[in-house]
Image (tube, rainbow, N blue to C red; front, side, top):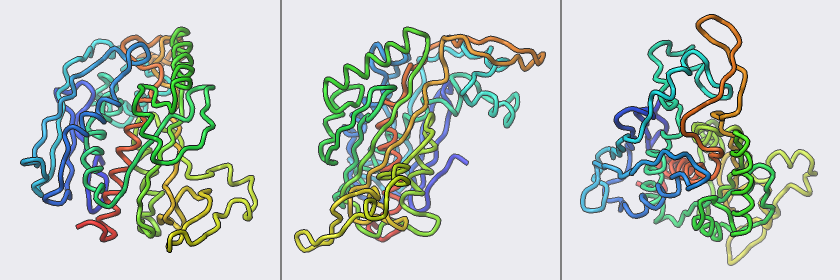
Length: 356
């Protein structure tokens, strides 16, 4: 299914080389202010950066219905984008020689000859464009609750940012295409990507995302938990292979006395001193900053020769992927992670009665 959500529902449609891609958002309350400038700013963060991104660049000007005079009308919001800069001929051979690490083979098994393999079809990173647009709109929806979302690249390849930052500091990462927290890290991350690109290869990365202002108790246990819903939504983003909240897997090496987050009264309210839980306990927000990390795999489409098979005759084959592909997708993926987080928080806020 291409629809996600309960009180707020998001439906994705189209494919990488279709004439159009887009989404439908149902459940946006009438009167919700919508900032097109915010949407365009978020979409700009998803675009490829010169030198380290794919040469495919689209105008990505959204066409929107369900918005009138800057506010949602209460009707479903439909956002579409035209696909123009396509080179479908680059992909025809992949129907017989599927790319290692890509969805080509399982998609051919599932859909047969009907599978649209052009540009990766529905499995392309191109499909994150409407997700980012939807996320920008839903930020406007949850903004009045005091909820804000940010992210940064904590790792690309072997370059690691071990710094600790407050949620409000993450806005700095929007100033550079690497989504790094400072110029030195941006330069080192760029060099890591270019080194892989020079070898016809690619590199992965980790996005750290934070959301502040969540009301304690947000989430719907047992099966629609805050962390579970975010994990489901984020795993729909192409290239995501892992997610962890707070200390994550590192908590397995800690004692309870180390991993527990002590409470104190701060300005008359309950507050946790540390945040090993990542802002989630029992599947509900605990009043701390929501803090999680998302791992993106190296881009599977690489120029380096890889082993595959020829599906026509069942023989082994070598494959060097041609066409236009990013040597790293993690930096462009950061804003997509933020968008999916905004979607989940909007859905849960309506379900929990925080928004009407």
